Image (cartoon, rainbow, N blue to C red):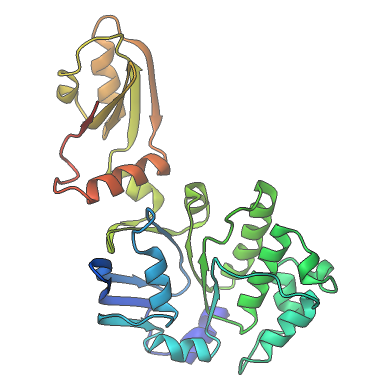
Length: 318
């Protein structure tokens, strides 16, 4: 139903978010360097990147808090300011403090009244998991509860797109789980979610698609499994016991390797072939094989995207 309503509002079918050759520089630093990215309606997309990769700049540009030096940013086919003013976009940014001496219901209601077609306050509170806390003062809530209040405030305009900048930073495990349960309730309505996070397991668990930024450009874009396959689908490790390493690059399937202490860690596109080849050698000890994690994949992608070598080039760290 929500998706049908979105199509009626904008029958052109424009993506929720579009960056078109966007450049934004701060002095000599290009925080966005010809950035091209589109997010379809109804997607939940994780935006990953090292510190300084351009995530915060991209979020500022798409919310209309900053302007590109070149290129174009669009929300639902138009300028960001128009979509934000219409309540089609909600955002949770990293900065912000609890408002003193107001209740949760009062705060969400005040924000809702600034939009032309707001979400009913009770509905926003329910989606954020705050119904039982609606009469509590915001400045007397726990960190996890305050984060849910910020989520309810972002929902107040009844947005079709919500942007979350490190939404679970500094929250404990239970509070993080409660927050993502609330976010999934919003996404299940057919809405679009873009979130940045340093918790890679959140991207793995909750995103339909992962976009990795590096040096202001898209370094990788796809599902978690697609990204893992891009850099080699598995990890194989074993004890070197002080032996040579020159033969590792000849092992079948190996795309890169590194040495940590006395242990070799091989990234491989064919774990079975790599393990069989190692099993044929004498004195291989402590052999382990595991699928690549998103953390390993992220490190490989950002390390390689900053280097002039292609992804298929063997890399050795000693």
